[in-house]
Image (cartoon, rainbow over all chains, first blue to last red; front, top):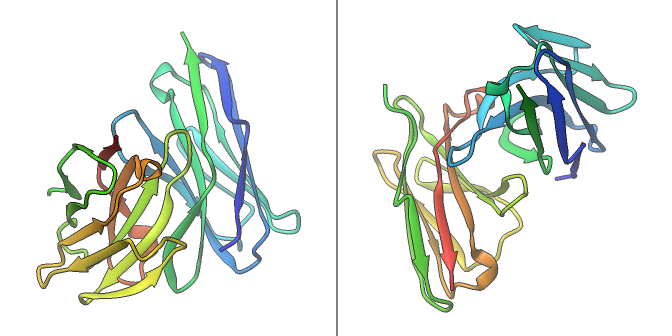
Length: 112
Length: 113
C-alpha cells in the first residue's frame, strides 16, 4: 500500500484557536479516509472519516476537508481545547480491504 | 459493552526470545487485525484474521505469526525477537468488510532488551 504523508509533525495552538493537520496520498484506489485520535497509553480512536464523493464533513468542532484532484485531505479542529491535546493520525483504506495505512502522526498541544 | 481487550499491557523480553500477545475483540466483531506502532510513528499493519484464517498480511517477516480461535479471539506470536521489535502492538477488531467499524485496543507495550 502507498504511503500517507502527514504534516506537521507537531503543533501548538492556543485555546480557542483552529488546529489544522494535513495529509496527502498517492494511491488513487484509496476510498476511505479516517482520522484517529490517540492519547498516551491508549489505542487510536476513530474521530471522523470521509469518503471521496464529498468535499467536506463536519462533526461538532471537527471538520475534514477533502480535495480529490490534489489527493489531499485535512482535519480542522475549531475552538481547540486543552482536552484536544493528543496525537492525531490520518489514515486511508481501500474498499474491500479493512486494513488502514496510517500517516506518521501529529502531536497537538493546546495551551490554556 | 467491553471494547477490544489486550493482554498483557506491558512486557519485557530478551533478544532471541519468543513472545505471545493476546486479543479479545469487541462483542459482535469477527475480524481481528494486528498493528505495530513504533515510538513516534503511525501504526503499521501486520496481518488480519477472519474465520480463523490469515486473510491479509503486511510487510512483516515470517517471525510474526498469528492465530484466531473459534471465539474470534486472537494471538500474535513473534519469534527470535530483535531490539527493533520493541513497539506498541495494537489489536483492532471490526465486523467483516465494514472497515468503518474499526475499534482498537489499548495495546501491549513490548520492550526487547
